[in-house]
Image (cartoon, rainbow, N blue to C red; front, side, top):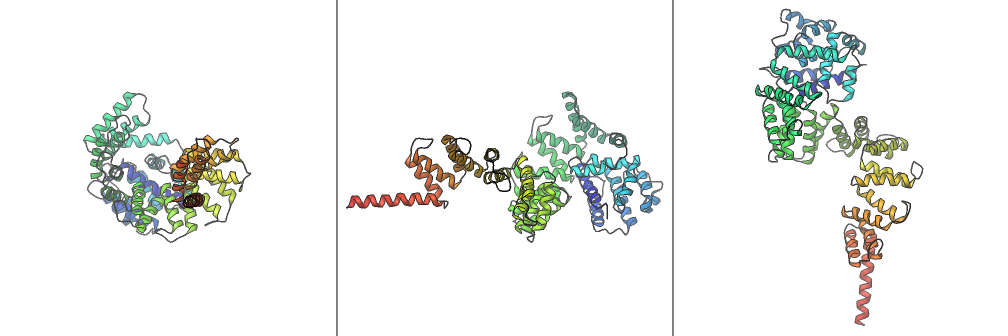
Length: 516
């Protein structure tokens, strides 16, 4: 179908909506169960039984403000009556509910039809309501939705806000707090926002608990207090709010405001992951991969990683690419690896850009293409990926695929070394030792060799021994030289081993001479 990518994005946007609003969307009945059934049905392109499915959603708990008088016709209409459905459901304030109903039907519409629907101010408001709750979702989702609107987003957001605030005074306080926090004009605005949130929290309103908990966690508008954040998030998590469960899991994992407990962290991540929280899915994948809090299980790691990757989380996409590259938890598949690296790289993920560059450089999963590899290496390097910076330094140093340029190589080596890239630290030592930085500078060479040696670089340890032995940039110190050579030799460095063998031969000859 022509609109497939956009439509899948809309569905993932709905997942994010649910995350932001929390788990207790409908009273008494499980929203998650209904949504999960809907989502699976759409993904399978099984569009039969619309009436029955809509009836289930409708019966799952429509707020009291819903227009009931013509409920039978609401339930019974089919796709060509989508606009009528949306207008009726617009009477109630639950943005998630009417967005689900609208976009359930959108899945069977072409992009042209979607544009027609979104040109209607009332229906456009529904799309904006989704966008409003998806601010942390991918930019592509937000742009896809807003690009369909034929009027000011601010106007339709105002309509949504007015409908929502009329319905629930607790929610009104929450939305007032959000408005003040998003564009505070003074310290008093922050104080007032905190007051609104505290009132909503007193009513155990889950979104307010999460919001205030995050403020305490980050120390925004209030003194940072992990204990208070933990308390508020615990209340929200007990209501089944995925975002709160994920934050609590992280706090257990990092020992923030609570004793470290990876088992509890994994348990909470699992609860949130099953509610489509992509950050929980990603973190749970890492825990299965590392065997942290759970039994190591690469298959489970790949399962959860793929869920988060399919939802657009670049970190998960990059990790999934590595799992396909290494055949870890999945069959080795370089083409899949390239696909996932590309998806993450296009979102600006520096690690994925570096990995994609390596695939083009080595011709794995794609045709070998050095110019394209250089493109991705450069993007990754500019995004502060130290490995890409080091690789660019080596390419400019050798002139592979680019004009040989020691000055540019030195630039990238310095960048990488400052970020702790040990090979770049060693190469800076070489450049200064050989005079490729402009002049021979033994003091700078010694500095970078020492830095790399401290980080375990065997050849740097050998070179450091050479400089101590010859007194280059430092007073001669044979015992320090021997110590450096021993460290290098213990890692198999051949030149250091040769040096030590030479010293042993000399020592043996000297002892024989003395015996003679």
